[in-house]
Length: 118
Length: 112
Image (cartoon, rainbow over all chains, first blue to last red; front, side, top):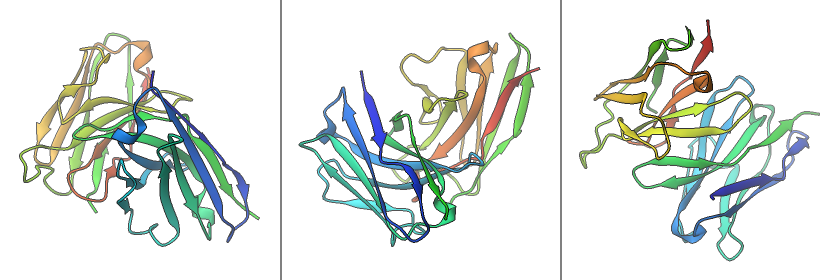
């Protein structure tokens, strides 16, 4: 059974940094592109970015690429999202997703909440 | 960025009723390779989104065949032929033809 389990969320002050993790199981992690998607409190969905199966290439939403960094550790089957200089508009639930070629986001984690507030 | 407009934003239905959700794109989603990367997700209350339909009309494994997808170019439709209680939630269309990936605003399906 495919499982994606995010962690690392919480309350963070504006301007701070935060690193989210996503541990994958039930499939060969190193065979898949992985993505981060966030959902705002108003339920708007936004793609953050993704990373190639071997970690050699990343794509980001243009509005986020200067502050967010995606990485992975295939030996640990873990995906990461490093968030820096966070803003109130980064308040959202962050989802780790598996991306399958031609199919899109076929598995989602349970999500982790990030609240940016002073 | 490609804008996906879903209508209606809210849909009230009775059990057994057939309903349709529209997703219109600001530009054609036909990729140069001949594929159309338009997919549908369902987010049940309190749950994560799940993939229902990919490449316009292909049902994800385990998805009941009362769900169907159709369309081409800029106009797409998700149809549920006989709503069941477990179908309630928010439906999103999502496109991957043009970078970056973008999502529709969602359609909430509720019981009448």
